[in-house]
Length: 587
Ligand SMILES: [Zn+2]
Ligand SMILES: [Zn+2]
Image: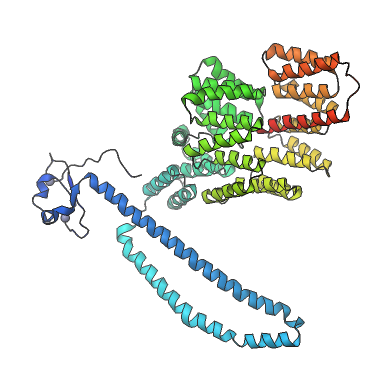
């Protein structure tokens, strides 16, 4: 952790000599770092057994640090133990007091007598707390203060702005963001304009997905240093590359857009940024602009990985998930831990309902990115889907360790409630998350599913779309959700007109075309389906879905099935439709 490449110090007395030795004797008063010349003239000669090579010094520091870490753990444990003891004591006393006060007027004679007897012992309780606990605690207080005072000279770091920022940056690399924020805050208390601290705090907030706050801090950095905000953004990106998670949000992607768009202005051939921008745009359902990004990469003939990623993303837009997965596997053969490829692969596998393999891929990611919040997101969603609540709860506990206030913790609770059919309660939770961050697209999509499940109150759903639409924050998303909802409610004519509005704004929106042709299929307009599929297959030559639908329509026409349909078959089709919709939720 603290290793430098090599330590190289010069002797202060002998300019040509390097420091070669260090004395590790605990009570030695001499200069500890010496050159060979110095060594011969010092007290160290008396205890050469405790003199080591210079490299030894660093190992020693690390070893001694471990002792402090153990001291921290011990202190925390003692603290928790004592705290729990007091909590129990206080709770017990309160139970007694409130219990008597609340029931004293309702007591029968014998109960009243018992109460009186026990009340006469309360003095003893008061006495033992005052006479034995209080003095011992004040003694303990003194001891702790003494330990603190005695240690201060030796172990407490000087706390200037620069040191605090460096500690914060170090903790970010250790992925302990809550602790990092404490140090940035301490620095900001000294100087509220410290750019590095502001930036570090913004990074912590972004990584722990407090996007609105994160934006505030990024903007503070920008307002202080308008001349060169990119420097900080670039630095941030490097830190993120270190974590291999340059975008950790497939949910609220706006902060990331904020970063990537800035970067793109700098460099048009920065394929990573272009890819991330496209990915984020697709995550917030802006498929058209996302497509432009991916095509830009492919046309520029970027380095192979980003071209393959862009191609696979275009295939996901066409719901060609098997083909997309194959391309991703090409990347993963050579770079088995490629973060972007693994993420998209998991999303494809989830859409394909191949939950087991998705889970295996998650585990691969966790090996390499053990605290990556997005992997947690995927895994939690998968475990809920598989109804493995024990494991899902474990995951929630792990998330709490990273940051108790992560929105995802509430999100998973809401999903659990949904699985238990407690729809109202889960809707409440979704709302409480969105109250904090109204732009959380994952919650939004999940809320729509919950609303659809909540068939008792269809007006609630309509109202929701109208509100969403009037806010104009999500581009086409409200319309897409509305169309999907109409589709699921079997209102196919209305669904088609909604899809037509979307397609008039983005004629190449493949997923909407697929949904539209599904509607035509439901309406038994088989000839129209055939024509539509032919038109689509001119554009997407190999698209399996259009081929499949076309074959189905052809079969219907050949069988003369235009009119007669069995109820059962229709039901099956509705279920198939639901699958298509849930697939759409993923991107
Ligand atoms: Zn010397
Ligand atoms: Zn010595």
